[in-house]
Each structure stands twice: as structure tokens, then as C-alpha cells.
Image 1: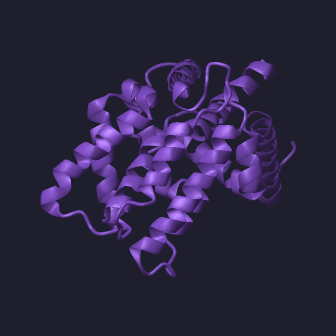
Image 2 (image 1 turned 60 degrees about the vertical axis):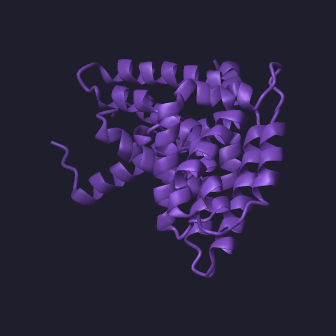
Image 3 (image 1 turned 45 degrees about the horizontal axis):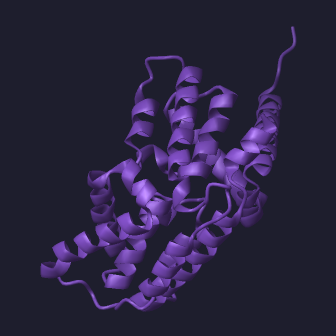
Length: 270
């Protein structure tokens, strides 16, 4: 009888993990080349392991389901499973009564349906980028004051912020609705305060990025520029921290929106 020593078993397990990393990274290079180019293999492998661990918590263990979960992270944000803007994702993931592949297929269909409905916010009908509204709005945002929003002015501020988001991102606002948009705005204000951000410019920027990139953008493995700016111990004042977040966000969004739409790559590889 063949007996495997523990070190042999460990070596086999490590080899299997490396094989999964290689296969998944090659898949991401094909369908999400911009992510891979911007982050590099080392960080993308960290993303792969994070997605692997998260998917296991939802009893998604088949390789196809784990890889799909990691794809959803690239499309919707690493914390898409708990994002208040995506309640349908949490509902599907937490319904463990059915077959995991069927759940994965349902999540895949719902995710792409959702994404297709958002496309008009940043692409024309022919697929070319159209971010003029966003660029104008970001230029105006840069001129907003850094003074803290007073408590008595907060209701008017949040209403104006909601109207701003609805105007700049009408497709997404129409999909998620007013109530969930308000939830993200109020949640982002509370989260931003934890990073010492309380001014009009900083709170507006934080809320917009939460709405566009996901409510967990501030500690998303796929968005290292955000956590770097927010946790920079050298940025003693709020203005410098917000400047860094602004620069990182604009640079990322320009690159992201100009890159080929992932669904085009999916279709080409089908």
C-alpha cells in the first residue's frame, strides 16, 4: 500500500494551489487585462485567494464557481457580497438550499444583466467611452470647500449629494433606486468620518466613489490607491488626504472606463 508522508501531502496541496492560481490568473489576464496590468500578478494572486476564501463561506467550492466569484469581484468590487447597492447578490449567495453551480449561474446572469443596465452612464451605444458628465463634475468637485459640514446642514447636504449622483449617473441611480442610494450616502459619510474626512469635498468624493466602485472601495484589494490615500500617516490634514484620494480615483476611473468592456472579451472567448 502506498503511504504518503505529511510533507508529501503538503507538497501536493501546495502544487494544487499553485495550479489553481496559474489557471485563474491566466483567465483573468484574458478577460480582465486592465486589472492585471494595473495591479500585477502578486496582488492579483492575493485577490484570487481572498475570493477563494470568501466563496467557500457561501459553499461555492467547485472551481468554476470559485472562479466566477472572483470575476464578480473584478466586475462589482471585492465586497460585492455585502454591498447595500447589490441586495440581490447577497440573496443569491446566502440561499444555500440549491445546487452551487445553479446559484453561480444565477449570480452570473444577474450580474451581467445589472452591468448592462449601467453601461449608458459611461459608454455610448457603439461601446466608446462617454464620461463627459463625470469629468465636468469632478472638476467642479475639486473646487468644493474642505470645511466640515455642520450637523444642522447635513440633511440639505445629503439631499444635494443625492441629486448630484442621480444627475451624473442616471442609469445606475435608476437601477438601484433612491432608497439604496440614500443608504450608501449615509453609510459613506459615517465611514469617511472614520478616516477623518468631514468636509464637503471629501464627503462628496467618498460618497461618489462608494456609489460607483462599491461601498467597500476604501479597503478593496482591487483598489490599493484608495486605502493608500486614506491610511497615509503622512497626510496629516484632511485636504491632503482628499487630494490623494481624488487623484487616485480620477486616474483609476479614466483607465477603467477607457479599457475594453469585459463583456466584449467574454463574448469573444465564448
